[in-house]
View 1 (tube, rainbow, N blue to C red):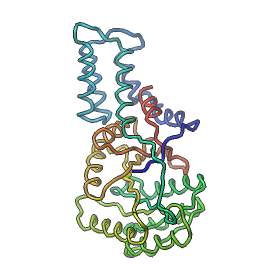
View 2 (spheres, helix red, strand yellow):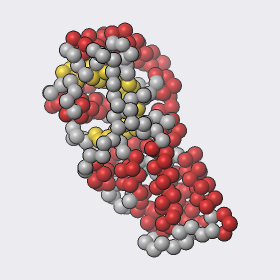
View 3 (cartoon, rainbow, N blue to C red):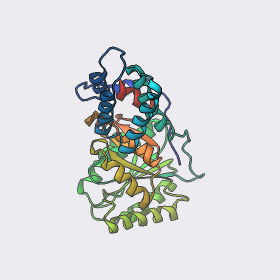
View 4 (cartoon, rainbow, N blue to C red):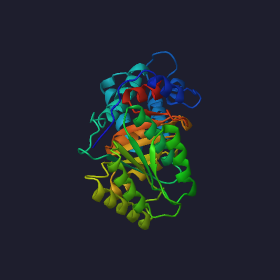
Length: 315
């Protein structure tokens, strides 16, 4: 399992914090409404309120119950917890969950072969835009990137990727709308080898896990890639829309069981003050979160940092 680990670049925490700056909706602000500004002893009613906040923030039922159980256990023996202690417990609990999956594995690929990354997910989560942002980020890191436009179902996908390729100065392999996506993957694998590319990013059509024929098509694309490039695809990134809540967990479970998933990219984080789906997926699926999307610009895809994320939503 590969992961581009977070390197603590300045400004990432600030940008994440800005995403959650709407204090009328933010998780941290709702804790303030419960506890107030004073560090006072908490009540059973306040613990119940914390539980409701966690559930409404899409943290997940099991994660919420575990955390509330931990808080209640700490109050046994007539010990009284203060609001600052509860805040610290929440922060540490969420951070431990996220840190557990963020293994610092350096991206690698077989010698003389490009690393092949498949981008998968349901319709409308931002796969094509994420492909463009990834191409931009990898290019900035000095890597030679090739985009494979294998989403031939959506007419505008190829044109959209062509714009991204031009904007990021990366190569692209594409065919006409309606073409066989496996044939495009075949061409892209050969082009990636011939042009000595470091990375080939394959954009795939949005598909529901319940559509058996589309999932079989994706499996065929994987087989074609593997025949042309040793070990390909080396990574399969599932793109999740942060605003979909717990549906994101269901999508992760189904795609993982159907085609395998090595990493998660969470998009549209700027569109929600919840963000708890990140925690739910990390805890339930044990799949690392690689990047989060916080806007529409080409540099609005930032490496995921558990500490920055938890600091941001709890502040």
